[in-house]
Image (cartoon, rainbow, N blue to C red; front, top):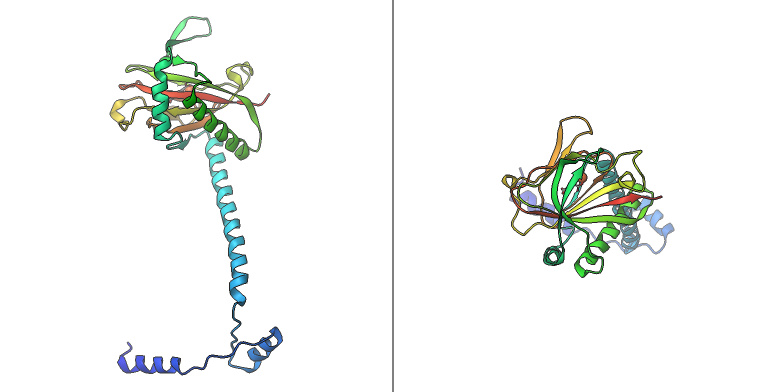
Amino acid sequence: MLHGGALRSAWLFAASVPTPSPPETAAAAMCELSEGNGYVVVPKWLPAAAKRHRVRANQESADIIAQLAGKAETATLAAGRVHKQRAFAKPALVAALRRSLGQYAFTPTASYSSDGAVDDLRSAYTARPDVEEAAFDALYGQLLEARGDLEALLGRPLSRGVEATFVVYEPGCFYRRHVDSLAGVDPAGSGGRAYSFVVYLTGEQPWQPSDGGALRVFCDALGEEVEEEVLPAAGLLVLFDSKRVSHEVMPTRRQRTCLVGWFREEV
Ligand SMILES: O=C(O)CCC(=O)C(=O)O
Ligand SMILES: [Fe+2]
């Protein structure tokens, strides 16, 4: 333990060390190093070099972080999991889209089994977006940017065309377990879907588990194990592999509105 006297003498010693004058040249610096006190002072030598190094290092680490994030996202998607992005559509855009929905005529959408009979796979109301409508156009622009990011992550192009539909699940509506696309099925139809997206356009009030309507994601196509349940949230984007991710919309107890769509394989 140091007491007062020791501290004071340490300070006096430090104050009495003379400030060396800087060497003019590198050779002089080497000379001082070998003959002098064992140190040299070269003013402004480190700052410029360090600055250059810092700028490069920052850029490199930013690139590495971006690459790792990209890898993590590619891995998430490739592992058949769901990528989620909160507030993909900002509150003002969600509000504008919700207002615009008043202009659409939603039609009940039944699903059909392979023999053409109506089955009970899904109950919901759908409307085709109006590409001239400003709020939809804004969201569509963001989706095209997201597609660009996805293409960069995947390292391959996707189709220029995007499928999209507004869907309203009224209380009691659901979509039973399914995959959005199957390999070998008509590539001009659902077989050409590569990545599914959903942008939730629910009201401002936070969604509660008791509201039902979760997007239930299964670990694999056949098993019963649930990977996660995603609750709708205004502006949330979910993105997943259309062929790998088996999922289900649990019966909702509250109106559940979204834009659902697909980025398609390049043909
Ligand atoms: O609304 C959702 O969360 C998913 C909808 C869906 O699975 C679909 O439309 O294929
Ligand atoms: Fe689906």
